[in-house]
Length: 236
Length: 287
Ligand SMILES: Nc1ncnc2c1ncn2[C@@H]1O[C@H](COP(=O)(O)OP(=O)(O)O)[C@@H](O)[C@H]1O
Ligand SMILES: [Mg+2]
Image (cartoon, rainbow over all chains, first blue to last red):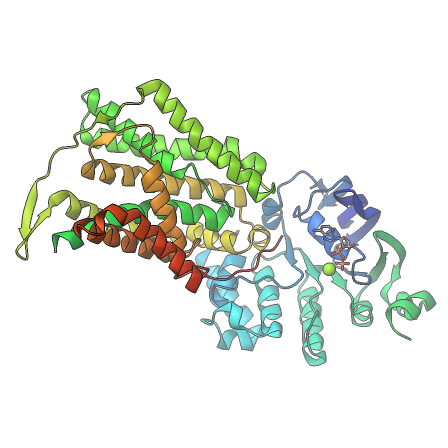
């Protein structure tokens, strides 16, 4: 069954039609990626699903419930979580406090502490910098923090918007490894990337977004071999 | 010595009001120009309760409740519909609300000032100086309130959520924070602080009129900007600085007539040297 189903989604900025009626789905246990060039509408799609941008038309169904009209903050306790584009960690709070913010919907204080410990083991660099102000972390560390923070709510569906943006190749590999880890632990993943090669290689299925429309879709490995995709997104 | 005490206690009043401006600015990114008038509402609440023979404790309680309700109602009906509108539209609405509150109180209570006697507390001798007890009370309770607020913001879940919302509403929402609820709570806290300020104000100047909130409102706003609008310690620092400077100026005969000019002059100088205010932070705005 589809955990997330987007049907005929339309989003406008004023009179500009940014998303022109796209449909896609993410099944439980999958990694699905949405690839596309800069300005294709990937972030708009991700933000409108979480209620950060109003939806013009269409339906978003999560776990069998239509969530268009549900205030975004309630989606977190329903099991959705998003690592936003640009990481957006709380710059003035410490690493530790950021992780605590990620557990805002969690009630069990002891469990929160354990989860933070778990994340600090998974990301040793965060562990070493627990009391450092997040704004002073490097880009890679902030990305790790944003991912750790998003996992603090124990999501069923983790959505990531360009987690590899602006990172060195080594860090990009690390980020993708972490996504694979979380997936192995049972998290369903919706991934938005410009790094199409990396994204497709870990995805079960993928969609290509072009100026607000989905133009190609299929299995990750099939898209890696698709001539159109190769030319436009893999630089081959 | 007594000037210092009076200045500090006036500063505490400004600081309490400035906190309302700065917290609302930090969280809702708007200048709530009607905030000063909440003080006036609080003062009339005290006046009416005392006139009706109510105890001062009842007056304080009612004043806080009425201010909080007023602040929350104003936010819900005047500002919330404008969320996402241009800052200018919000500013003009806030000025409109300010005039509305003043006009209503003028209709109900008339324009002439009414006397409110909260109990005269007299003076004490301290370190060889004569100090009014009301100054000490203001200073002590003001300090306790501000310490409590600081702890609340630092230690509680709601307080941390306020920090998150003030930094990035979108990211805060992604944590599961109900941003609208946090904004409402912020208005409620700001208004409760204004109620406290109105009481201390009446202890110093026992008279209430519809425009009572304007001057302390503007002074406190100045204090908030001096300290760095959006910054809670900044509002406290700015308020205390302004209160002390005001009392010092008033005690020097040559300077006394120019007190307000000195205060706004200080604002201009500080903004020229440090446009974000003494403790203000540069921050980027996001979705
Ligand atoms: N706040 C905004 N106001 C107006 N247009 C916007 C806004 N945000 C994005 N857009 C436009 O919407 C389109 C899609 O943008 P976006 O979703 O950010 O693309 P992507 O994430 O794929 O790079 C672009 O043409 C962009 O210019
Ligand atoms: Mg984007």
